[in-house]
Image (cartoon, rainbow, N blue to C red; front, side, top):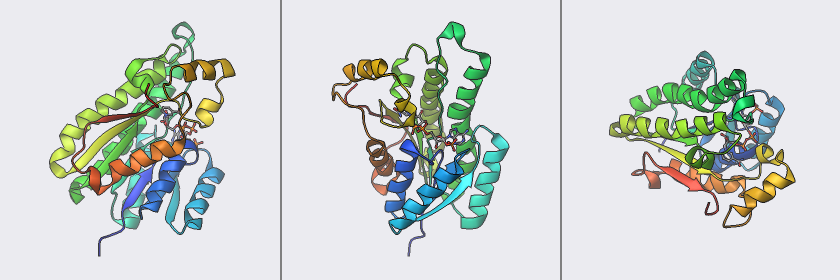
Length: 244
Ligand code: NAP
């Protein structure tokens, strides 16, 4: 009998992370639903996964904190003995034009979005190297590929994810650990809900599909990259953006 896979999804208390957690649980994995502040929402995600007859646990950890990430992975590995899938999804925005962007807003976004992914890869890959297998998927963004006015911090963090992905892919390939990034376009979540109608309409005008994507569009892509079928795909950035 093959052992049940253990999947860690950061920032899984809502939005895209929640959809990815639910989809990975449907593939039979035990899903660790990570959150930072939203405990109740994380508990709801766990309950929804269990209501579908699948398995989940919740774990609090601020991914920007190196030591907290070390502790989280140590706890997971001592409880379950393995980590098969890591999805670096936790992310924040603190938008503003360059001349108004504070040092704190730059650091907060880069620390969560980019350093957070590094921290988790650092500790998950140690276990994956022992297992000689693993799947690492990180959320970039079309903004990391093309840039966007008012998002210098966010674009830098998401472009950084691409470099991190490509470097780690080369480093870990010999042990059959794949490392890929997904670059979503505009997806309907709380992150995009806060945009003004004017900005939303301007965004839609740039999308050949003419509509925002759904979290499930990203979840299906993540589940494929996490599957055995994607075993020979590594170092890639998959844009899921309605043709942008
Ligand atoms: P969201 O609805 O704002 O959810 C963000 C999630 O990240 C929440 O679960 C939040 O949990 C968690 N989080 C934030 N800071 C954290 C930290 N320090 N440690 C652990 N968890 C943390 O965002 P989303 O729209 O689903 O986006 C998910 C990912 O996709 C992000 O990386 C985002 O940049 C990327 N993305 C989104 C879009 C889009 O259009 N929505 C487009 C491109 C890329 P707590 O509330 O518990 O802190």
